[in-house]
Length: 248
Length: 187
Image 1 (cartoon, rainbow over the protein chains, first blue to last red):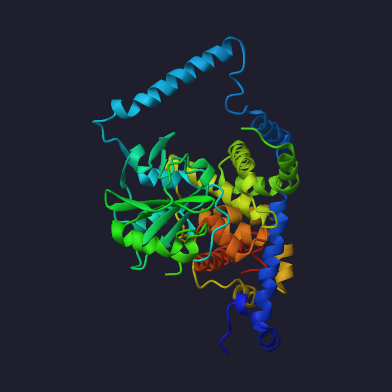
Image 2: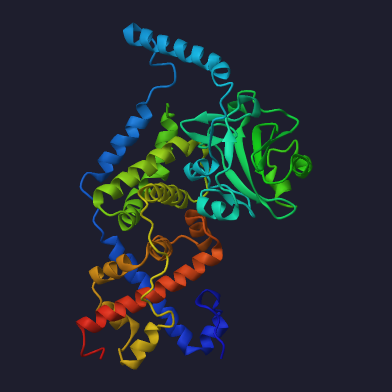
């Protein structure tokens, strides 16, 4: 008799097959033994207290700007802020002849948290190895140009400048090529995103930027600019463009 | 960054209650107690910062394991310390049931009763990390295959095949230890 795998056993088959009953009992026995033995791994003394203390430090971290309220510390922070603003304003002029770039794979490797709510037929790019294997040139140079909606932040690059916020989906375009969709709350996009999509050719990839009612999107695709714009057309105006993009 | 006190209270109720389960899993990934604890703390800090995005009603434990595993993977990547997925010494056709029957061990219960917990932990520790993670998340933490696939960022089929390999490998290792300890029973 051909037996199904243990995951696919039916009550009818179990009634008829003694070997499967024994295999199932063995698997259950192994599970119970594992739970028992792993449950005996000791928790270090003070573990919960140290964890709580660390979480309390997160809680007490000041809001932006609150630190610079008064006294000489406040003056120092205000001076620093002024200098930073000045430097930021002069940045395009200072870097006008530079073509700085970082590896996109660094961004993917860094992007790994808060990706639990992904639609079907897409997945988080935290599996950066798989992403790298799927891309012939995973180290795509990403020019840091504010006009293209790209921004450096703590050496982590994505079309929104912060890979830590919002899911990043892997999708397939109509020709089966893998593309990456970055998602960002519109309130955090700092008016960098147009409502109508715009596409830029960057290295071997195209980056298309647009926004829906509440969310901003950047699609990094190996397709041409026109192909990418055509692909995202049905998804415009939606806050869940992946439903349209992945359905193709 | 300021955390809303209500959010923090909900975080304590929904997330921090899983801290010990996460520590036990981390302990099986990290080389030392200190590293495991640090990994768990990093995981909870990230989870707290992102908790406003957490959807109530979804599996918080599975979400935490995802963050923990990704923290670990980032560390492993930076340490250039990846391990092999396969256990090359294992026989994929090994059947613990056949061995028990061949050697007339009365029941699987008798076999497990005669196997001390530290031998089970030793056998689990000898698994490659990929197999160890799957078997711990499934058989100890009770996550579904789909949740494990999301935690480890691997396809569902990979979870099934790794779990199958992990159980086969565990059975083989436990049998080997059993034979060494009880030669009269398992000749």
